[in-house]
Length: 487
Image (cartoon, rainbow, N blue to C red; front, top):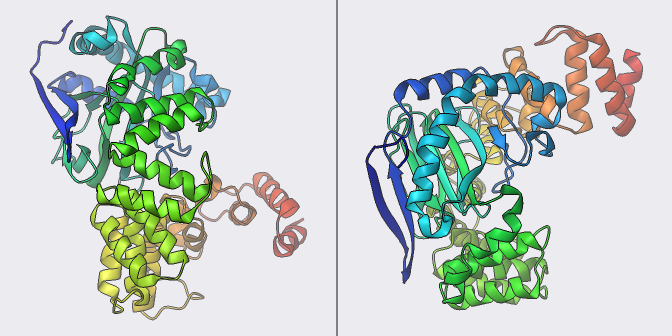
């Protein structure tokens, strides 16, 4: 296709008991040459700050850098490019690497997409969004399973070496199973939006270049996207019915649950598609689009869980936890955790820590599940567990072994962990990383005090006093007192 003449491997993922429902995956070997990959990563590594807005899938920092957005990078709310000064600085990097990626996109990838998806693209598919994501040791390690609702076709090009630079990576699957895709640097995974996929990096550093393709005019996405799976949905495909419902919800604005949206979700749920069943459970639990009803929420969560939806098991566990039915809750947390649900893993670790839900208190198992979880809360909990086993009080300066876990949590913007770093001068540089990214008044006051004293960074009286003043205006009497004493 176009200027690319490499090997293309194809496969598909079947949805368990729904044997007639499947999603295809193609792997294009060597879409990028080694020198192209090396230069791209080298230049992107010079970017000091990637975007850290909340990801739409899990609300953790995105750690991504957009190469382009057809609708304008400057208009992306919450992104660093919305700041004119940051946009100008980042544009210099884009200008430097564009001569590398643009010919790859236009001469290799776009022709490949239009050839492989000729029926859906009709020769009109183009990349509307292009970005690079990084997974570093001290940043996010996971991107939970999801559908790319906004794309007709997705292309993910690996820019680091599978099983050498990192362990894990891109995985695909269904609710019951998952398989890692062994992308070498330069290889590309190509799929449509019906593929359930995610990322988990257990060790090392992973970089990837992502392109989201749409058919025709990128500005007309809302119009064309409704046709992407309409034909299959009307023919009774439950996966297509679910995807169609999601796009209808997006079109209606802020994911509105209209009668049409609900109708398609019900069709998919009645056909035993687990994500649709999960969504009905959520609607009943929150009272959004449907009558609020714990009974009906449990009904649909139970059906989704039977179809191996770990999110449904977690939601059921939470409901029983709130009802103080700890034995049932812990069993469900365990089920979800074994299915790879990271919040459930943390809750199971907490259950072992406290010895509840029929479990004997076991700090080793508590530590294991918290480490498996890897969420900011779990990493902080792992630190507190370490402190407890060492007999350290909350008032004392934590040991290096404890601070190891607090630092990991703080790098993922856990507030209390970040504040704890201030206690040890060896971790002040890390405190200067997380404190500016937290918006509460106590964080502003702590950062202001560090800058006033020149602790961990050059002394900056003007900025320090400005932060203290801002914190005092909306903060506690203690913060106000600190500000008044510094004036």
